[in-house]
Length: 113
Image (cartoon, rainbow, N blue to C red; front, side):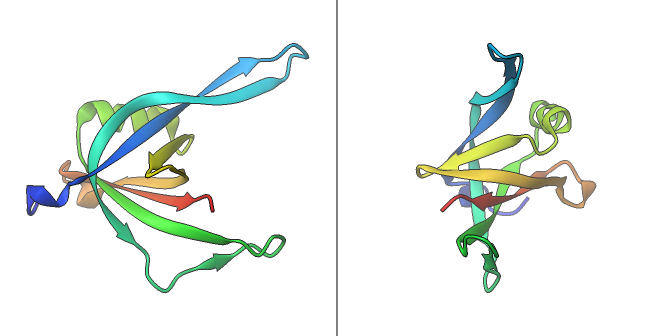
């Protein structure tokens, strides 16, 4: 797993909740699932431009320690959860058990700018 001191940044995972609104429409909200220590790696040289709004998206890899509880959460939620880091909300695009070794999980996410 390498140097444990590399997991020095704190993120919060937000779980998606769907409720029915007064017009029987689904209302999406997010609640805190938990906070984790992680290592963060930005993807250098890869900025994506949205053709309509020309905004830049920050693509980031959050590397967290593997746990069975976290793996169950990610299997249930797929990519329907968010990450909050330093006041920025990140939309999760993918979460992978690194090399299938149950040591770390890499979460690919795009920050909202």
